[in-house]
Image 1: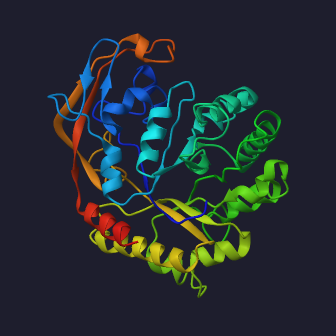
Image 2: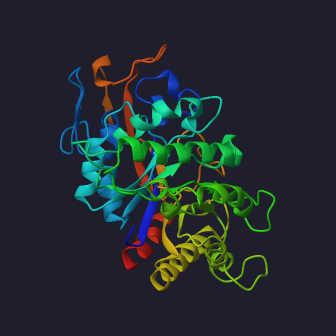
Length: 370
C-alpha cells in the first residue's frame, strides 16, 4: 500500500438477510455481498437466468452502492465474508473503475479449527484464485490487502489458529503462486486487552512472535495491524491509558507495523455520536497525513445499518439506514449460482432503498476534505 485510504465497512444486506439463516439460502450463502448475484445492490444491472432484470432506468432499479460510495469520497472497501466458489470479477472491476480498492476477506469459517482450518491446504488456493485477475496471473489490481478472519475473541478462535492459517498461506503462495505480488495481510482484532495493558497488544504479542519470523514470500514484511476501535480521538492520537501518547504511536513503537483501523465509528444511540465520529475521522486523516507510514487508513463502520437488528446498539452505526421502499426484486434460477449446498432454498433477492443518516454528512465532509 502506498497511499492513505478513506475506507468504509461494506455489508449492506437488504431485508430478508439474517446471518443465522443465511446458509439456508442460495443468494445469501456464505454472506457474500461482493459476487455477481448481489449486483442489484452494488452495481448497475443484473439479469438472472430466469429473465428477472434490474438496471438504473427501468421500474426494477439497481441500487448502485459503489457509485454512492465513490460519491462519498470512499477509496477503500473492507469486506467481511467471501465465498470463493462465487464469481467476483465484476465487483472487483467495477470498484476499480472508480479507483476504489478492496480489503478482500478470508471469512471466519476458514480460520476456525472446527470448520475450515483443517482444510486450509485445499481452501487457500481456492481463495487466492478468487482474489485473482481474470488471467489468474496475479492478485486483481483492485485488491489492496487481505484481512483474515474478524474479532477472534468474539468469533471463537485463537492467535495460534491465525498463525497456522497465515503461515500456510505464505507457503502456498510461494509454492503455487510465486509470481503474485506480495499483498499486505492483516488480522482484524476487537479492541479488548487480551490480558495486556493496551487493547489488542495481548493478542498481537503471541501472533507476531511467530509471524515476524516467517520470511516465506516476505510475509513478515507484509503484515499490518488491524485494530477495531470505537474510542475517541484523544485516546487514539493523544493520550491512551494516561500514557501521554496516543494508541497509534504506542502500537507502532512496539510492533513497527503500519495500522489500518478495520473498524472505527460510534453508534447513533449515543447522545454525542456525531461529535465522536467527526473527531475520529478528522483525527485519523490529520494523523495519517503527517505519519503516512504509521497509519495507512481507516474503515468507517459502516455503510448501512445491520438489517437484521434495527434500532439496536449493534445495528445503528451506518452512514445509511435501511429503508422499506423496494427498489427491485430478482427471481433466480439455480443456474445463477455456482454452489448448490444441501438444503439451500432458492429465494428472491429484494433490494430496499437506503436513507442517509446524520453520520453520512460527517463521513462525506471528512473524506472529501481528506
